[in-house]
Image (cartoon, rainbow, N blue to C red; front, side, top):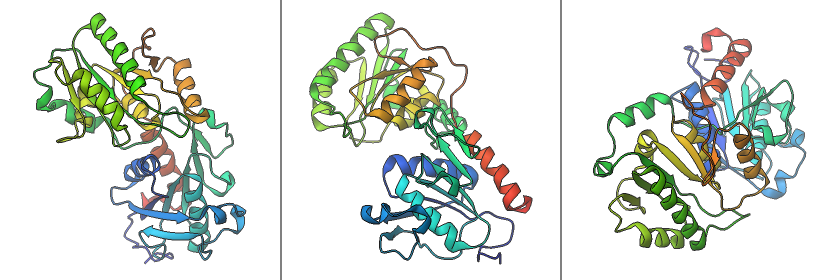
Length: 331
């Protein structure tokens, strides 16, 4: 056994830790599974009052940390990946409790960046330093191989639709902006204008965050349209097939995750804005400046010969940290 109680056969023990929000889990999981397919999830609950404590004194013995999924106990991980500020506090406490060498990685700005071996941030996070790695898109689990496999077997429900296919990914409201039926009708007008120009068909998919009023408005508009497939939540979700097979993608601007996954494909990516907070807007503006995306209704983005996926590059840097801190036997 290793000093921290983990098996010493050369395999890595990797945890990924969040407070359970879907967007945070997706980023931490995507990176963790790229490091080790056997990575384990830990979901914690951190009381907001305790989360205000100075990061240096935050500990697992404080009543503010509750394990919701997975034990916060030995064997401690070799690599701990956290995402979200409150999960970062719990990760720092795990590192202090563990004792043995541990590589700690945090995604998004943490309360104490110096406490981690690597911090993954976007340019709009305005975070700098030797331990900071900037990425253009959010981390996720959609690798090029997975998309290529999905492209070989398109969803049969798309078979009747004429090319080119414009995929439409619907998000939802944020605390800064609603997503209303008025927005849905405005989106439909722009989609119809695009289809008049380029031809082809629309493949529209809702998410669990999409408001019922938006689904109803778009359903009323497209349910009888023979050149549209509209997934409103019934049957299998066509999301992966849509990403893999669409010739162009339209994504609502509320979701950093969906925009990032769309950019992992080689399709042109257009963003339909419904309003956003500072962080979302900063993310979008950075992509617009690089012409990686375009606003729906504007000129096209720059062509891309391959998908844009930050996760493998971050994983490579984490592996370098593992070699330095834990030794080559752990790789």
